[in-house]
Image 1 (tube, one colour):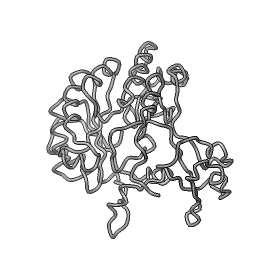
Image 2: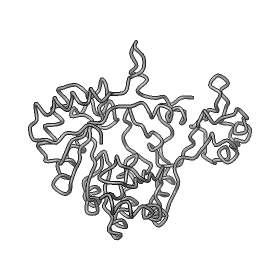
Image 3: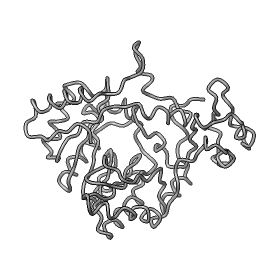
Image 4: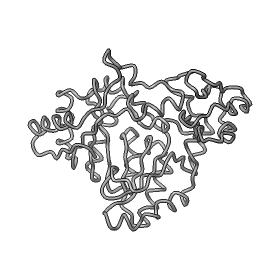
Length: 327
């Protein structure tokens, strides 16, 4: 039953997020999503399919069922209660598996699970509900120079709710950031930027064909938006350093030169980690990075010493650009 992806959005799913936001998580006390202590609001929905993504539960703009294998006791209640009979119990793996193509997301299986092995990822929330969570940490923002970061998935995918949320944050005089791929029409991003203090923008590769092969889309729109965004607000560029994809010297230098040329505030190197693998398994999806495994085994995390070497390479070839390892 493993799939590269689950079912695409239905028309009713897209209508649902016009008046409410579909939130996968609200993370308090975050120190990796912009300056200071922040609250990060993660929204579901993303047009990219990055092979290394650590948040695959944010791909789709509908609530999904996540399976936590370690919590499953093998009672098979979910198998018996499913009205469409689209759940089977995998005796070898000791966990249920869901035929996502047939599942209508009635969530009866989740409601019947006593151990919490099945959980819903994605909650529809009204603006005031999200703001109530955000304002809990207002004192921390003031003392640390922090604020609110809207992330995803791709927060621009829920452009209406993201805009409402950012506007409301500015009404409360909160510092705002967005964590984005930059993959959207400029008019959408331009409106968002009116209420954004800083943009955390990922650049994955400078070659459009390689970018499309590994993410599902080319980078033309992303690079064009990067140039325009820097002219509008503060921008921190981040490179997720992925083995066998973008960690070669040529691409790293080319990316750094682009970042310096457009005038971004800094460039951060973020190392690949396989923390998303369990999430893929919990969604009954194949982990894309596993297909890149060599005779030596799975693709290994990128260690700090490799990132330090790349930082040194950039500093030798691109003078005047601030480069950091990590967020």
